[in-house]
Length: 62
Image (cartoon, rainbow, N blue to C red; front, side, top):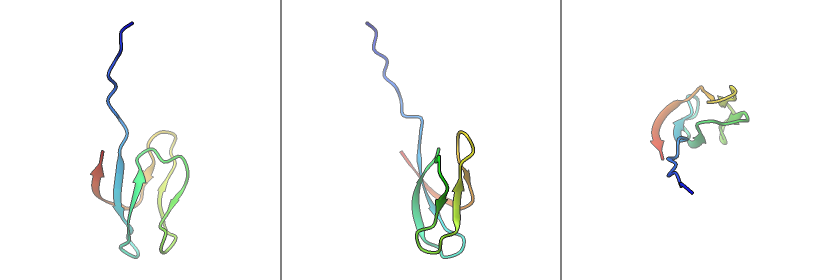
């Protein structure tokens, strides 16, 4: 039996809320609406595959 080493293709992003400058970590392929924990603004909306980000990406985490 052949085993394949699978590389992780998904990422997490550290994003910054445009309203309150709160930094939050979100999943690249979020399947639910992601809101800022401080002010409640939408940071990402689901789009079938990758989420539509509405916040500034500060850092890409692996």
